[in-house]
Length: 201
Picture 1 (cartoon, rainbow, N blue to C red):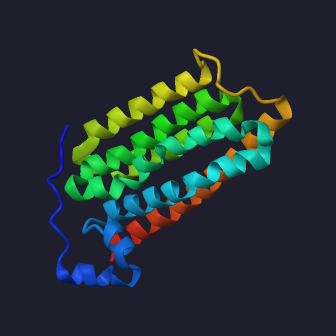
Picture 2: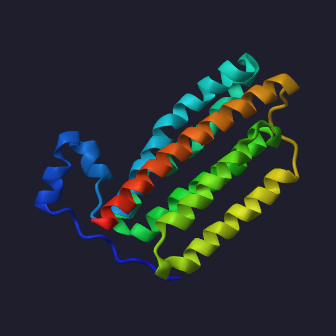
């Protein structure tokens, strides 16, 4: 496994470029475009995580309200990705994909695999495959192996879920998760397209 050296602190010019967004822009900034893209994706996921319990209540009813708040536990991991990436870009990228994967497993245990929570695993795999460099292949394969193991656990969950939903409620949550995965995939596609555009200049 090859680890990248800690990134150099932003230059005055880079800090000025991040200026329009203020502290948030400086927090997300990274001299490597692929890491900056990962930082933004981590912020998008972390920013939307607090809304997930509200969406659950809307889709499945008030019965999910107390347990649904457990899905917030992963939020600090996503928001910490830019902080870690500034110190070690490779570790930051690995945290993004790993946090998404482990959060999927945790939510499958909380909500039950019938809610389609495992649909979030393909975006995690795409992140691991697209954002790591060739010399980080061993780390990428390790993250992909973790994703595969979690996919198996989600398919054959060894323990009952914390929350048991009626079939209709689970179907509504599944549709909600499918829509969320589609939106996340579109954001990822747009960011990766910008990376390719920058490389082609």
